[in-house]
Image (cartoon, rainbow over all chains, first blue to last red; front, top):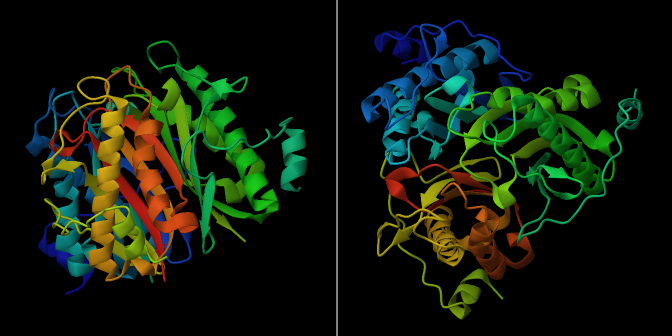
Length: 151
Length: 151
Length: 151
């Protein structure tokens, strides 16, 4: 099954890619590697502000991470022209806006990791780091960046 | 216009590259990619300590980020021998020492991003993530690392 | 001297690689680059929880970072089949769970950086960033990820 059929089956509508709010570009490709800029979580088009362990719980964070993964796919679709060009999701870095006692960043990151594997299958399996940060741009609850191998 | 003429026009004097203070090297090249170690902000040759939202504001942070970009160029000039070998600034990662309520890491990072585009033009446009961290080595206010494609 | 003889001389026994606790894989190779997932510090097989500057000091952190480097070698041995395939340690990223006043992340990271140079010699010299984060998965005191060039 193709990537776009898989997205349809998962009932996922890719968002229109929006330009970055600051002085950078959404992706840069070098050789076969595409570096995707950090995407912050959004809800109804606005930054999804919050801090895990303070005013959001792990399940909220998972949902936010999953929604970022959808936005990342929207960006890749727009930048690559065709998601079938994704050979492999190589690396995911998940930054979780975390209160002092929150230690489930890996479960938050799963929201994105699992979606990528649902969409790309084995090609969606990636190396990953997840970490709790003090704050994020615009108070976002989660930010995720990717390295993707393209063909 | 060449990179060095552009630097002159911007009135930028490249610093003498200083060796890392710990057990690592300033850059490693693999294939066409050059990974540049995190550089902390310095002022008058010493670590520029501070925390955004506590004892520094966004404009201070921008200036610190811009000064790191100059230091990164100094390192690249020293390591590559010639800044004209920079094919593309691929990825910038900006770590901002942030108090709990500071959410303008993206504006701080612009200080570095804009300088790279002033110097390299379209080749200076890069993917990026910006994040607020709890602390940085030697109490530095900002730290930035790069991935650069070289020819 | 070969890598395995060097490990023996250093009295290092590689751990059995353990599968990630979440939805990702230990490494992904793309071209000659191997991206290694963030590994958290462990002690007696369990997450080594703690925060630098709160209930751990710099020397504790160094030991934790060194132990992660050993675990990273265990993962690379398992994934590559032979550590002699490591051409170069390209980049190390060290995330230190830090209390508000702890500013020696670079000295903590040295615990890992120095081990990699003891084991691989010049090929172990790497680019690096070290940073203080608010929290880490399972409360771990340190997390480290790598980019490795393989042959």
